[in-house]
Length: 421
Image (tube, rainbow, N blue to C red; front, top):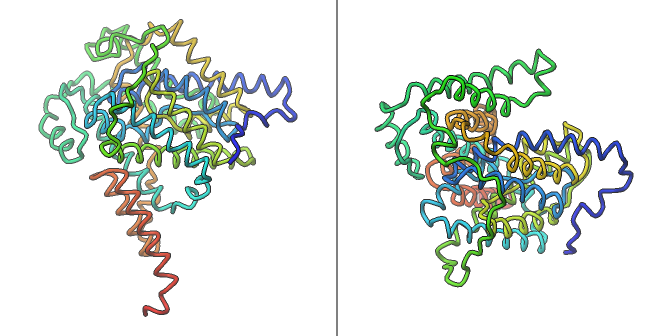
């Protein structure tokens, strides 16, 4: 497999007008990426700057090294539950190592042309684990949404028990703030159907600005990024070199494979969505190699796992992005915001970020497919429902493993059905 990033072949017919379109698209995506990257990092148990610097580095590397012209890389909602579990089970050092080694695995998957095989993963598996992750994101944000002062475990049943036990300790002001933010997000979304100007203003950025303004003006006694984390540093992160010498591959095998498989599925799914908008075709194996190099280098700057992000990529396309330039401008926009406006982030309320993630989870879930499950063949019903349940109560690796095994079994059964019956 030849290593040939799409950036090398993106300039045929490129002109000044397309460059201007890319710059404005990159600016638009950059301001949207700011609240999302912070929210994803905090929900994963990390500091907000980890999400921002991950978006900066991943955005630049995915645009430069990937196989899709308009892909925007960065932290993704699908990784929240996985990263949170790895962080609390294996520790921060092993999270960095697992991220780097998952990058190596992703690169090898692209090198040996596995990209085409990932496209064959049944849609029921994708619908099942996507909806399962959405449920887990929702549950993980109830702590901040309610203003609870308690550590929430990663295990599903322990999480439910903790939330049920401490729900009476909720903070009324935090809850009201979160409910207002969530109501605003859904109201703005509905308004897009009737008010044209609403389509051009990102509701996620707007609600963050309004919530931060409200906390500052009314001096609301709720937790903010400043009270929890001390703000956002306005300098580049120091180089971190994880120690690979004593790594126990057997110990980290499941986290590494889970991060790699999820990263591959998310990035290629995002690239396919982009193809539908641009009427172009991406190089799936080059995309995997680009994602692999990105995730290998991210831990050296304390970053978290990254992949292609559907919401930001679609925003990039709809804003006029046509080449990797928009991804690079998106990263540069975040750099400028951090270095010159980072001090303004201290009063962003965590309740607002929790509302944003619950909104993201709602948009992320494939609820239509779950509602219409009875209309599907029996084998699809089993696949979708079991992958969904296993994702929620067990883990993603087991859920995807079951989905693939079930698909292989059904394929074998269809081939030999006449002999067996």
